[in-house]
Length: 508
Image (cartoon, rainbow, N blue to C red):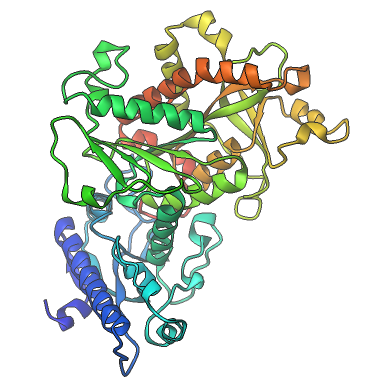
């Protein structure tokens, strides 16, 4: 394809053809940047600036009519021109193709694909295993600024997702929550914080704040990989559901260490994986399915800042749901250590999202997720009715940014927690849920009571160790079972209208 053909915007009525054209624009530009950078590192100094630009997709409509009103996405808000830049078509191929198909189906007319004016920063053009900057002198790195485009933070803010973006008089309306530079930025951050490539992330995510859960997830992952396909699922307590949990084909650990299912051949990129000398800040582990509908689990550590940080980035992958599994302080005397709390509301005293998502914005429970979590508890514990309610309480969860809230002067936060009817307290759940609401990612929270500081039951080493041994395996299996149940649902049910605003972007 000639450069002239790439620059000219083309119209398409076929989603696959539109995606192929976007992929060609992107790959041609990235290859140009990579080759130019290799020449620069080798000592060549170009006469002018080296630049390549992202592809874009655009849709125009002069009517509010659309073909399918059941979905909460896949259509534009009204007459006008809508546009977004695209990146990594090979990573987002299925996602982009679906969005293109919905636009064509709902609006009837063609979609346009062409080369945008938004430069691809040179750092975002690196391949997975490029580390070229480390071989250059400080002077050469400084000169690099005059030759290549560097990341521009002004091109990657979250105004669209936050509902604060204002469209200029001659500007197109946004078609997606994230621009291509914003997506690329987060892909780089994910790699840094989790120690795994974005390609391994799955569409269902479990967040936890304890390494104990990760240890159990790793054990179960390796146990699954040791069995050939067809010889039983990971959650084999329910034979009638064994086929659902028997479709994982690989387990990936930090350093992109891939363990393939017994009987399956290794893939070429597996050879690049190697154990890391130390774990990254928020390590991620992935039970992979061919359709990307497997499970990613991330240890976010302690605190709302971490929870916001990693969910800010994972959101660009447009997952189908994320769930928080962690420990909490039980606030009611009737609770026992080891009881579960299913959050149906949140008191947000975490503060990390106050600027992006004001406190007056409610974070509603999502029925599909709530039902899946409750049923998963019943499936794993084999309890029903009153016996189930004895260990599972639905209520408000408060999240704080002060780990030592118990030491504040009395009456301190206890009064607010009581007024809010909170039944549990942690440091991350409200952040994960609020960011799910903010980024239109279905969310849920299932916590396990590990102490009751208001009632004199604080964590002691012996108690904690016994508690962790008894509850972690069951709690994790409940979370994984909930994902199996969510996976069965139609996406139009899971991606709720509760998460969409008045003038919403078309992309899911």
